[in-house]
Image (cartoon, rainbow, N blue to C red; front, side, top):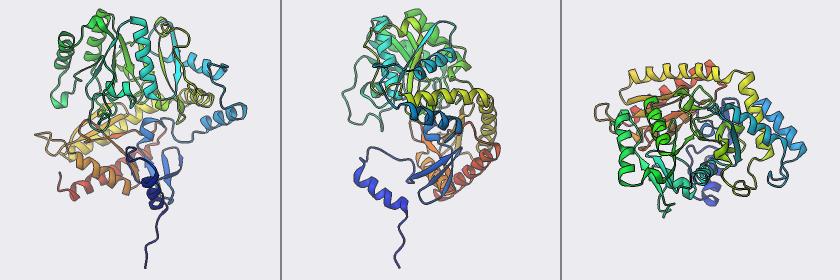
Length: 435
């Protein structure tokens, strides 16, 4: 008797036939609908979504306040292009983001469509303001898939492949990674070495960093490191750009991850959770810096789309009315407690790290050698999916299991997700002899 083909299997065949293989998937299931912290696939199976669309759904799927705002805007108009005919939602959201951004000085906000666009425009603005060509980024960093984004990204595997040559005048300094032996002092000395041997700091327009590395494995940059980098950039007239595309909008328990350090950047990029799944990104920063490009130098046809701006305003209302930052802090405590228990039980959990509810497990074959266990991480994701839990990997070695739980998750949902994660880890270890 022939097996009945599932809808997931049928759609996967279409995906393989018509979609390029370069567009990878973490999970071979097709979403049909989503609500809150849950996703249902086309075969009707329910999952706890601890991936959140790669950190996009901080307010959860289908939040009523967001849906209402988008529907109302949809009935008015969907597009006119802000450079042709401006509209209120754009300037209202620009005002609110400017007030939320770190720094006690006048700020302005530019809206775009994708995170990579935000990064590229931050570099454009920095170059226009300083008149300098060079940019310094960190190893293990991820800043996008465009030409400049790939040049800034500090990970060759997956992202750079054979796509070069890349944009010039981009340099990389080591990221502090204490678990793998790179201290704050060593990272700062590496940055100074870049300035001694690769590029004169007086030629550097900007230094861009993620306060908590996303794709790089949820590595939080220590307060001492950020303070030293801020002093160094001030000394050399370099603009500091905080890439908060994954770490922003409450993901770490503060609106912006860099707020934990007290360091104030000159420019800050954001995207992902700003509009609860609608494509919107931006750059916010010092008004005099943001005004450096002449009229016509910034923008984009879909940049600051009115539907997305309406969603962004609703997202900020949700943060305020539902106390999402406080809920994020409580969520972080719950996640850390559960993951530290896993670390105490399983030696293959080499490190639990992150900041608040932006937290991850680095898996190793042996806690002494710290040899990365990338295959184990892959099996954990598969076993978790079989138990109705969606997770993501990260890290230079693909051995980090990261959690991006929507901030609206309830205690029972989080505890159930942690239970499924533990079962998945147990099964993955049993299936691979602990490797």
